Image (tube, rainbow, N blue to C red; front, side, top):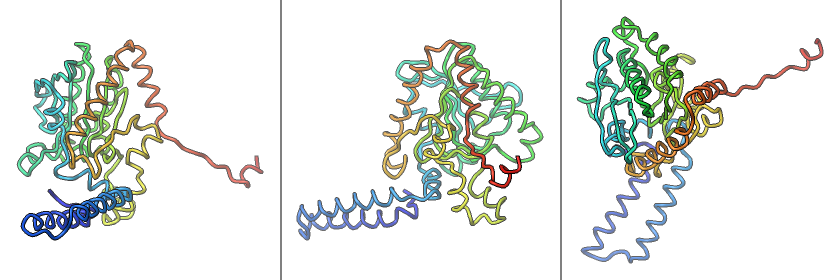
Length: 326
């Protein structure tokens, strides 16, 4: 497992305890009580480290190569899954995985953004960066859900829509804009979960829903920290500063009404105990489906419209000087 910078001290402590246990089998050096005390110290160290994570530390957790991907959620949450392909216009975008799913016997249309897990699959999936046909594919599947009265589940995990020439030539901006409009009009419940990176229009093009949940260490932002630093300060190395100022983590966004629910991760991130995360996301989906299924389509559309109208908070100040001149 790849060791993140903030975890180095923890890993060294774990190795030390492991060595003591191994040596104890051959020649008892420490008593059981002493080993227990060391393990308690390790637990305290973990609590201290993970309680003081910086915004950039959490971005690194979100990007950990062993963090569960959309395909992992599909395999571990679904009783059945039939994948569907193509946008019926140009081709199949491998950065989007979608199809018909059963979760605890309930039927859904499930659409996920997929980055891949190794070099070969990441190249195949274009690192989770969607082309226009990816957005059209997602929309086609969502409209299929509407046609057959099936709820739609979207899993967001992308560093952004693909910014290359080929995508622009095929209408990248138009594809995203069309999805924003059409997803807002779908007459079926839409449940969105941010499971990893939720960057820019790449995420928002599949992020219109009735309820939006977000994993504790995921992030949802108009731009990546590196991109923000490059634009604002012409210096990508100020990514840590940008990450802190973007306010892109779950506890920030729930205060701005951008998301509705924070989904807990195990201590240190989803890669430490994927099974726990699968259970938490599955519970989030099923619980919200039970809530949303009672609303008739016209009420769903009104609630969805109001949800996005109220996103964001701002404050205005009037100086004493300008007040006195009025």
